[in-house]
Image (cartoon, rainbow, N blue to C red; front, side, top):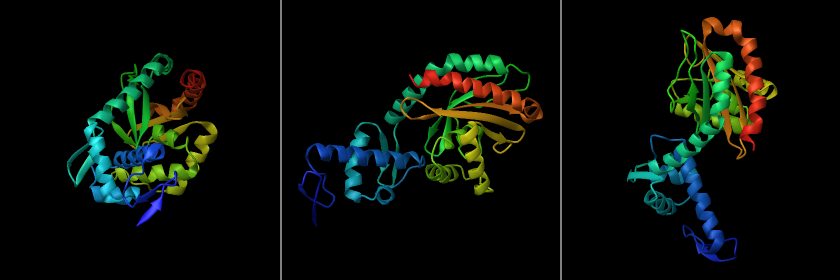
Length: 264
């Protein structure tokens, strides 16, 4: 069976069209495959990838082989393809640059509030911690840099979700639930209402949803490349309520100051 590409060239099903449009199409297909693998850190088979991106298995196999040659995916066998260390290094470089740019203001916020302050980025259906300023109190909340948390039940995750349209946020919630099955969502409608409020106030809350005894407030904004970045302040619940209004004011002030840094 044959069809025409955008240059009017006839191509067979599964073939890559030639010329500049063909190169653009291959890049788009490779990006779709990488996004699919990002949402499935445990790996997928070639057939599962092909079904997800709606491409012929032979096409997926060729693109995966090319990505594996660049270390962007690992393919230990046809049934086990996952994100490779090459792409992880690229992502780490981006995260490092963002963290370095924001770190001085993050430290200043930590000094101001006296609590732990976290910086996190979106990765698939998760929020990933990329930097942290530990709190100065005797009892503080700490998470390891590099740790992945759900989007749907954390303050920084909800803040990131609120950066997206309701439809796109809904898709990210589904990814979050798939990647973190240990954190089921009790009331989706309530979360959607909460995200609407976060879009209005720029503040998101986690009241012991992700961890017992820990509550958090978070905010997020888009950088110059349109990527959401989130800042959150986790606090032991026993003192969170008494500081809630003050933390909200301090975090919103920080968000307004940060805008000029991340959107240069």
